[in-house]
Image (cartoon, rainbow, N blue to C red; front, top):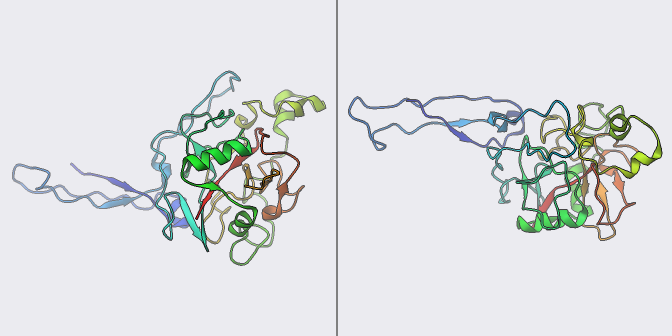
Length: 280
């Protein structure tokens, strides 16, 4: 019987689609044993080969969905970096926004979050504080990125304003939802809605939070995805900073890679707050 072995794709262009499906021929006419069979060819696929659960038609605010199946795995690291990471000069950074196993990405992960993972096609972890993000990175043997590292990774070797260059390209990143999710979900513009930004249904609305790496043009020259838009990303700044904007806005606090929110301490969390990790 034909055998397929899946291997991670690290080429950014290939990652966006399944490009190779090959089967190894099985082998001899004699009674077969593992030693007799021909070795299967590697089959290059991306994480879209993993069957992803469909979102619920209606959000149940009491439910804690787990949309990231175990078949989502970290790709090999580049330049000697750990799995899921990309070498940037003297440090490593997660290729994708972080996701957590066993925790709903639409709920705060609690005081002891599991290790951060950097995987394509995952729903990244929102609703997380800076302290919790740091703990998840530490549990993975990593750490939060410094502001300098984060900006270097986002802006690339040419120090561009956006991950993809110096000219804003609307729609390339997930960065301009036309209606604020709280206004849409609660059906009002009353300021009270902004005290309910931890509601789990906000990032489950259509056209809100995207799975990691599914905006193929939102990638840096060195292959890091979604540093602009999707979720704010915590850095290690002690006073509290998250960068890059999110799926509603990447302009108010600076354009693209220059976007920085400093209004909240490391204990803050809401539907828009996410992270990725760095390592030495």
